Image 1: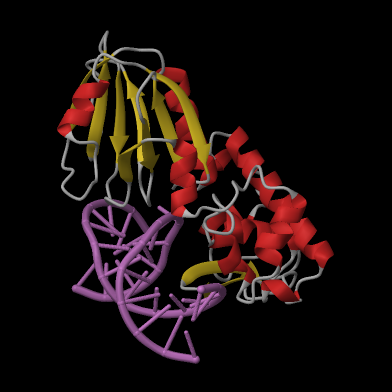
Image 2 (image 1 turned 30 degrees about the vertical axis):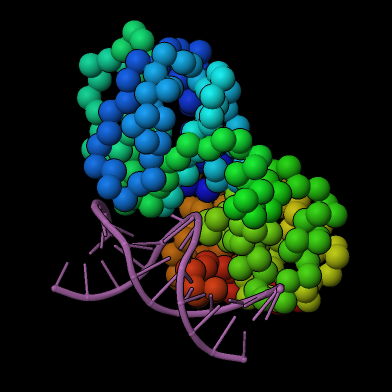
Length: 261
DNA sequence: TTTACTGTTAGGAC
DNA sequence: TGTCCTAACAGTAA
């Protein structure tokens, strides 16, 4: 369920298992919806190696030695696996990169929202997309600038990849839950202090999830992630969890300790 | 059988 | 021009 931490876990998996191995071949699954590197671009990659990875927000980049980068976006349901030769392939593998020796890097994407494409330069790509600063690397002032002056709902601001890259629905809710802010609050109505706290919460949460390799069961029980259900008792206070739609997305929040500005 | 869902983006309203 | 909102994309699971 890919937001920044899931993308980072996938990047690590690639960095640990798929670098510095000679690319032998590509296998394509059902990819009619995808904008994959062309046949000739793939041919150019055969015989080379991936040597570096990069991540910005939810976007993963894998760089080949001398040539272009591959950009990977996991979409709503994508995942990355590194498997040895002969291992059973999961369903919905769209693209496999096969390395000398038999190991394979497999991109799985049941719902077809994921994307892979050839990119000349990672930073140029980020600029062209208009992505905001990466949520783990953004500083206090830049965060206040990007989020604090938005007139719409603070939750929508957090989700805007043009303002801040990497936060998705789940961790936006988690950060607002932790800082006691109602998701519908106009971001520009929040005090500088609360914006600062929100910045800290976003980064603490993302870091903690990254440390578990996005394994939710390892996260503390009093996090909202384990309590996303209307009518539940709030794990932080005596309140009740409720569900509402904010900016078109499902939001869970505590009726008692999350307030408007 | 119906409904909801983690993300992105085109198109339209204001 | 900018900002915000909605719908649509596909497949699965509850």
